[in-house]
Image 1 (cartoon, rainbow, N blue to C red):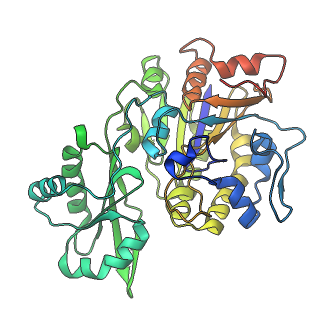
Image 2 (cartoon, rainbow, N blue to C red):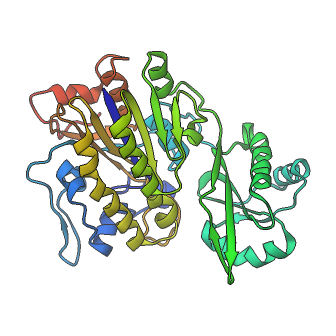
Length: 399
């Protein structure tokens, strides 16, 4: 048996009830994107995307409507994040069954004592130290960075410390070394979920990030579903930044990818070649390239690219295989904010043995981990399994 778990990074489907506490009122990554671009996702809709509570028949002033599929082929629902956060680490942790009582810290600027300690131990001097879009700040500070050779330090409304440098003045190995030292320091009361190396290049006054990004995460605070699977002889294959997020824990094989095209190609390879286990994929372009840059058209094209490759994944699935599509948070490219948004995320579960059911609204992304473990026989029935085995659709049931 194989389960393919694809996280469409930042593909939210509407604000959660507490979105105002995150200043995310009005965020709806899918809905607003559809209203803006008319994004066409026939395969996701066939699975049941437009049948999900809060999505079905959502209408817009210009007359557009998100029309449900008359006969969806997958189980469908939406999930609310239990962790009081909207970042990559917390979202993926919860998907993997790891609940954080206290989310990692979010900064507007890093305290001078932290910066000084990193600078001293790494023998470096930073510039920046602000909340910023990564592409904007390297363009704004790039020339000064080339003159001074000082790496650019910045963050976002996510639990991250990002360190950017042009590899012509700070070689990639040196940038990684600086980030490794920062990771050692950013723990305890100062902890951030990830320290991220952000290399870039320049030509004709334009600064462009490379695909040599590297994430340095903290080890998950408790056992992940991957570790539980591994203990029962079930391997996990990671694609994209999954290994970085979980520090490799419970992961038998990993492939880093630079973009969604590579991630989908690797997923299709595993569809052909993997004998058994969980294939855990993060498709990051929607978030990194488009959501954070408020590029609605680019976001739409990235979704359509994935949607167009879903039939190839389907055709390679075996009799008892399962495909799960979800997200880790929102990042609405149509709002003024360039940060993540506190939104429900979709849950689509497809397989030849999976009944089409309305799963309703599920409280917690960790429903996925329980379903995966149950499917592999590592634990008893999950709540999702019970709905799928029932004779009636449970559209009104909130779990």
